[in-house]
Image (cartoon, rainbow, N blue to C red; front, side):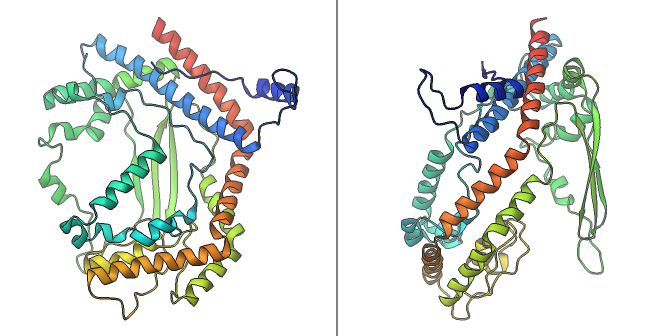
Amino acid sequence: MLTASKPLGALGLAAVLATTAGCGVFGGEEEPASEESRLVEMVNENARLDVELTAAENRIIRGCLEEQGHTVHDEYELGEWAVMEAEDLTWGYSPHDGFLLDPDEAAEYGFGMWADSPEALDSGESDAYWAEQEEKWEEEGGSFEEIDNSAFEALSPEEQYDWYLAYSGQEYAEEYYGWALDSEDGFDEAEGEDAEAPADEASGELELGDTAYEEPKPGGCKLEMIEGLYGELEEVEHSDDFGSGTETWTEWRYRPEHPEPTTMWEDMELAYTDRMIDLQYEFLDCIAGLGHEGWEFDEYGSLPVWDYFGPLYWEDDFVGGGFGTEVEVPPLPADVPADYEGRKAYEIQVALDFLECGERLDYAEASEEAYEEVHIEAYAEIEEDTYAWQEEMREAISRAQDLIDA
């Protein structure tokens, strides 16, 4: 069973910090915790509380389902997940990571775009690259225990859908779990072919405009858990303007609402750009001096490497905008090599040129510092409200335990 610690609340924490600042456990002097380390612990406690409350909610739902005779469960819905804890507020990421690489990696692989090309995949040339990347991702992100859902998957489609009906109610199950009654692989090919968005017959372009979505209200054992633990559901409406129309959608809310503002990440991106703007111009001037003109930083403080190199390997089959960026991508050079090996060599050279300019300007160091700063400022701004939210979460966990023990 997953357990989480129960640290002091906001007022209690403030009192402890005030009385212990500068004092070690045995009365000696001790350096007080930095602002960043305190905020990292706050973020990790958020994750622990979220996982613990989810586990408690799911135990209540399991009990409800088993009273109805459903003893085999979809573990992807009700399984307990490990807590993901951060070592810093940025999770080890900075906006420059995509275009300023490790020197050895840049010299051997460039940006790695070639590894997805038809030539590299067909020949197996990219196998070693992907194996190395997978090993690196495991080292950085840790490994996850696989969910064993074999018992549920052994049920017939009808039995699985009956479970979803009991779990979430008719309306919710029809919306989100209807695939259980489709073809064996969970996807109706005919529906998939017909599920394209409507197009203007004259222009062939997609018709864009206002869109609306209403989330179905949960029912079944999920609703029983919600009402027993939190009371009434609250329907919340959201809207967002995008180019040619307005998107509106609703959601059903019942948990304590985290105080993180909806604009927090956008505000951090703007603050980061404000700190980096002068250095970004210097970087662009530097790479232009090495023959790479026309580049622009996107709204995330990165360079559109994917959109630039994609057409180099896929030509007309490439679909750009991998990360939704709207900046202009420079055209490929007129003398770019026509063969795969020449294009891969060009990619590697660009990666090395970018790295050279990054090292000249100490760009990576400045970027990391700026990105850390904006995260510290953003989390410090909601720190007091976050401690209050944590107390609400602990109270919900306590109520859940009472329901489980009843």
